[in-house]
Image (cartoon, rainbow, N blue to C red; front, side):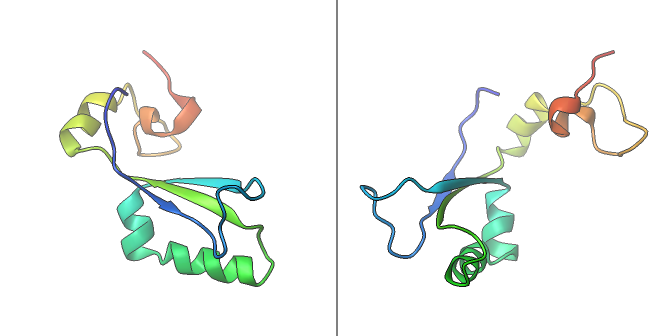
Length: 95
């Protein structure tokens, strides 16, 4: 989409850059996953409980509203969802 975004990176406890390869979790809507959902705490707890493997998470911020409007123009509405098709991943349709 040719825009820049801020991001945050979560690393698990005892992370070592030269250590084993880690699983990768990519989350969009960075502010929601840091302010509304305690994502680092959830990941720490799931890793400590052995429910998930240690992983690195990259939380990607939304672009500015102006940039988002330019890159996400609805082409037509889906009868299944009220969100524009261009915001639903690979289901984008063109008229």
